[in-house]
Amino acid sequence: MRNNKPLHIALSGIDGAGKSTQLELLQSQYQHQGKSVIYLWTRGGNTPGVEGLKAFSRKLLGKKLPPSGHSKKRDEMLGRAWVQYAWLVLAMLDLMWIYAICVRWWLWQGKVVICDRYLWDTLIDFKIMFPDLSVENWPLWKILVWATPKPELQCLLMIPLELSEKRCAQKYEPFPDTPKRRARRYDLYMEVSSLNHWKVLDSTLPVEAVFENIRSYLS
Image 1 (tube, rainbow, N blue to C red):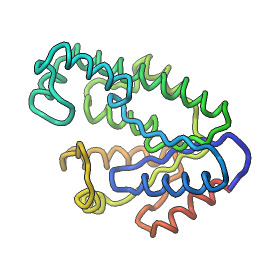
Image 2: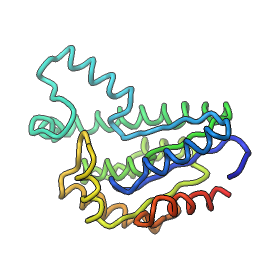
Image 3: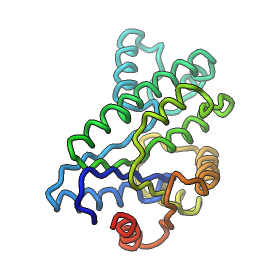
């Protein structure tokens, strides 16, 4: 692997594709080399700033605000247009702080930043949650894309939908997708897999083989 600093890596893919496993291997490798590593997981709307605001609102409003996770009350609330717009604006502003400020600061310090999910995974999340809003056309989203540092390596780990379902059934997911949502997410990843955002890797291969493929892009 390269020895120059800084280094910024992001892995994307549907649940069960093996992102966490590969990133843990990368983290271990760089730490063994004596490098300072930041492991970053992000999902729009579940970032620290938004979660802090939710916690404050729950204290203020009590049971009027639904808990995190899928529920009928939460879906009804997110069905209101003004709530959707407010939620998305807050989510993007918090992501702008994390990506444009925090990540750049860590890279400036010479740290290795490895990301479990990144900007385009969040766009897929938004498309699933709010399919009629065309978030990718919003000026704020375009500013976020412009301000977000582009990783030196972005890999998209791809597996069949059936394998994703099998792997997810074998591990704990705090807020798992419904079968319909998982299928939609898979379709969206298939649509964008041909774009230039990622190096697409076959994650049905053994863990060691996938890791070697990632290492080859970093050499």
